[in-house]
Amino acid sequence: MAETKESTNRFSFADLFIGLCGVSFVATVLPCFLKLASIEAACFNTVVFETFSLTALVGGLVGGLLSFSVVSFEYQAGNGKFAVASVGSLLYLIGYGMAFAFGGEVMPLIGGVLFGMGAVLLCAVWVSCMSLRDFSHVVSKGSLVVFAAVLIDQVVFVLAGQAAVIASMILLVLGIAPPLRIAWKNRAEKTSSHPSGDAVGEYDGLFAAKPSAKEIIKALSSSMMGLVVFAAYSNAINDPFPGVGVSGTSFGLVIASLVIFLVLRFGGRRITAPFIYWVLFPAIAALLVFLDSFPINSPAFMVGATGITVFCSCLGLFAFGFLLIAGSENRVPFPRSIGLTFAVFSFAGLVGRALRYSGFTSDEIGSILLVLSTAYMVYLLFAPAAQLWKSRKASPERADESMPEVDDLANVCERVSKRYGLSPREEEVLVYVGQGYNSPYIAKALFISDSTVRSHLKSIYRKTEAASRMDLVDLIRNENASAR
Image (spheres, rainbow, N blue to C red):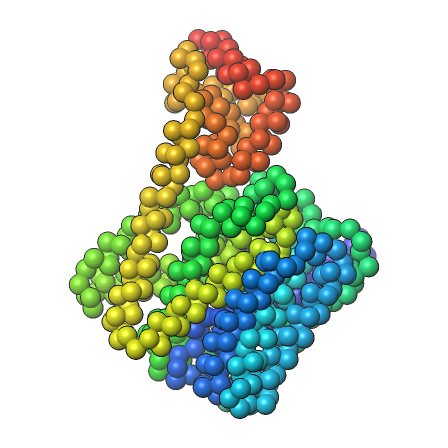
């Protein structure tokens, strides 16, 4: 027992250290891709950092496209992962050192590009070292990491120039330690393996087979839209609190990450991805659109504007969480999913920077961003209904009019579920089968993939000894008749 306890303590300490290193990595990367400090903040040399962060976005775009297009599917093998970790670490450290150790005008430009490319590769290795269980787990833990990272960044921003560089170098070294160590330890592995094992909850990935680039882009496009709004908004907005060196993005991320962590931590399984994307986000979007209809500088409008900042941060956190889960079973190799994410995010960030440097007034930039964010919120309002309507049109009509009505059908399927030992999710699928809906509609309605629906149907067939959907319909009809 003592030996088990000691092992547990060692494991907990290792987890704490990896968590600290993860926070350090995020704290180093975030300020270079998002506007976390106000212009007046004493962050190293303000001009150098502004140039460095701009070209880091260029590096993120180039590195992301190369990672998405070039890195092979054999990356998960130990040697491939170690090579990516090593190259990423070199680019990461050399780029940062060139910008802030040598100074000048050219070094920050080159250093930023190298740093951005290295960040893409390191992020892919970091993700492959994580335990990705389910959507809520990823988003809640990720929100906690972002919350801590933003707070650390605010401390670094107020340090004197040399102290800020030293603090940042410490964060740099901590940030690359775990991926290098794990990649080195597993470098001799010959076969592909996934660190998250089989603990992925009810989400089994988006694809049943190795996906093409077109399939990846199509599947992740909705979440990418959230990242585009977040990145453009963050890099273009003015600072609401310039006197204390806090940007609107810092404020939004702190509030959003804290709220998300608390809600998911204490909300349990009642807070699910379908509820968030199909109910909560559209409801909040509708409220913010309503508040934005008030005159500019009115109290209601200011509340709405602040709400948009927090809401965009929520979109970014949830979108990134979804993109991580999308690669959690090697359905989308991490260099490809992370590469695509960085490329899209960096491009949107460059668009935001272009707005900031365009010469437009603050009010004009605010109006453009308001239109962009409002358009996306309108999309959030109507996209679920449009997707369900499209799937429902393709779904066959109910084949048997003797089937019970929808309200009674749920009770009948509940009895069938108890009799045959179906899981709660299998029971939900059975209800839709009883209504005559096809797999694409069921997938949209339950916010799962088509392959997940097929997996649940196979399990239902096995447990009930049914051979087809019509057998399941007969089973439901017979159960309904026997209860009369």
